[in-house]
Length: 117
Picture 1 (tube, rainbow, N blue to C red):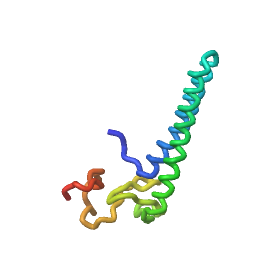
Picture 2 (tube, rainbow, N blue to C red):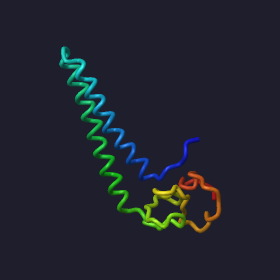
Picture 3 (tube, helix red, strand yellow):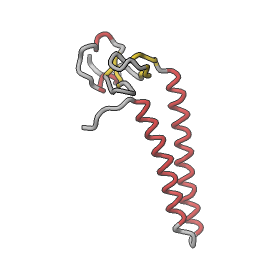
Picture 4 (tube, rainbow, N blue to C red):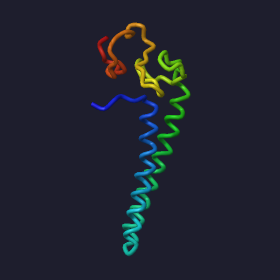
């Protein structure tokens, strides 16, 4: 199982990958110079991926302003927390603001509304 990362960093990584995917799609379009319709299709798909990345960055920026800044007890640095449980952005220390979850094993399922805790 992959190690869990901070939610904000995962979404930012997805947005950055959309930019690179869009550039690669547009680069593939260059190989179809003789067929302008196919080339334009690849170019437009690449631009759509980059515009989608811009939308994801705007969304995570707005979401990031609503988060609760907390000080990590392990490294002492400030981090932003989304949901009931999250990881520190810097040292990956499990964090929670829910007193009923303190001392329990970290589980992402605690963030789901139908989780029985």
